Image (cartoon, rainbow, N blue to C red; front, side):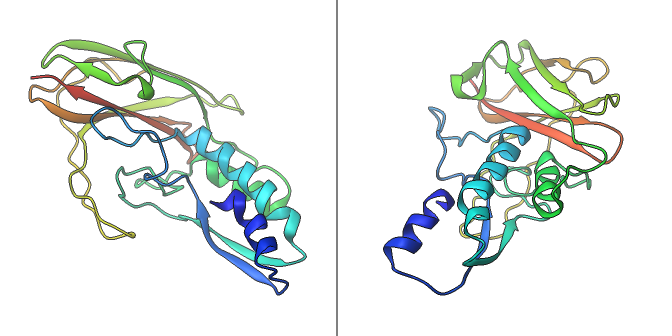
Length: 226
């Protein structure tokens, strides 16, 4: 609700200083869901774009009254997914949202930038297309990404069951175990994989690394039929 904050301040006739104590990614309760109620997560580049736009529209123009803000989350945590809120990966890499915060705080972009995720498809479908797969059948996913510095890119793919350990208000959630043995060949921009054998809700994750401590990420929810 950050974009509406200036209006709320004005409507309340608040004239004293204020601070934004938490702002960041769009909440999992605010986004579209699949037919099986899986919330659809923005990829790391779309999140970074949103961070910059929200700051420039709702915080920066009001610095005469807004005395500061705290971005969420400077770290990593599991909440619906391992990547939803943290702007770092569990393995320590910075995502593109860290680039944005560097720009916001310093007025210039970092010397080495994070890879940008341009598109991510599973059998030609996006996360918004209600992807259904057959158990044990072979499929293919493709990611398109670019690096602003021309760094060589490396890839990691994972499939996890949809999380069932769902907390409220930031409660601890355990991370689902990735399912081994589903992908064929060396990790690359295209990933042939076998759908899990058991029916149910899953997510396909892709991570794109630049070898310089930065990474892009995205995931697509899918459902394996009976």
